[in-house]
Amino acid sequence: MKATVAVACVQVEPVVLDRDATLDKLAEQTALAASAGAELVVFPETFVSVYPSSVWAKALAGWSDPRAKAAFAQLFESAVEIPGRAADRLGEIARDHSVWLVTGVNEVDPTRNGTVYNSLLYHAPDGSLALKHRKLVPTNHERLVWGQGDGGGLRALETPLGRIGGLICWENYMPLARFSLYESGVEIYLASTADDADAWQATLVHIARESRAYVVAPCHFQRAAAYPESFPLRELLDGYDVIGRGGSAILAPDGSYLAGPLYDEEGILYAELDAARLHEERQRFDPAGHYHRPDILRLEVTPNQSS
Image (cartoon, rainbow, N blue to C red):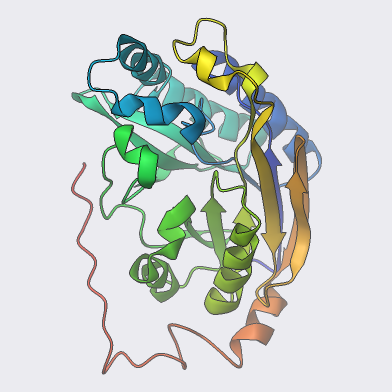
């Protein structure tokens, strides 16, 4: 890892179900972060352009509810095609501000366009798409929305900043998925999420202590008022205010907080990551090094099947 790395963990509300306006907001926030010196800018789970809150996504279980069908169609239409114009725009934003940009998106494959995936996209400062990871297993109500991911992105990405990798929300409860990142030497661990529960913070502390890596964890923030009146399931949001309160945070390799958690408001968390702290904490515990027994315990990862 580079001696010091400046990171930005962004917790802002998307322009719900409006992909292009959300990308404009992402560009503004990335510009702010870059102007503050950030080299790595990370956005939450499915920031582009909505996380399917259980408040309304449960209605997708309705077998023939026309409102549910229409809501899914809106989500699909606001998703990011890869390859496609929206993905290219993300690359342009990374290039314009000379940052590593990691963004959670609803993703569709234009060659097989019947399924939406929950994906994390890593764009390099030259604008190229360096890595894509699809959430392996959608959680609970999410299974009504997203398809299952594959083995892509389960190894950390070597960059001039250090080895960067991550998992999406409750994938972080999958021990073998975590270990795949540990085994590839992850130094900056990204835990993009929509889980705003207090218990999630204990998960972040554990990941930091187990990986002995820095953890950057942006959380989705959304309010009922952000949904357009044209949203077919809008009535299910009546009586709600904040339906995703955030909880973004940045943690050190010993599990201590460098920034956050941030709740109930928009904001950008910043931290400077010091490579020396990685070495200090790994002296006692290195999960894929001196505290591993590959002669007894081994992990096999099936390669990416989506490309």
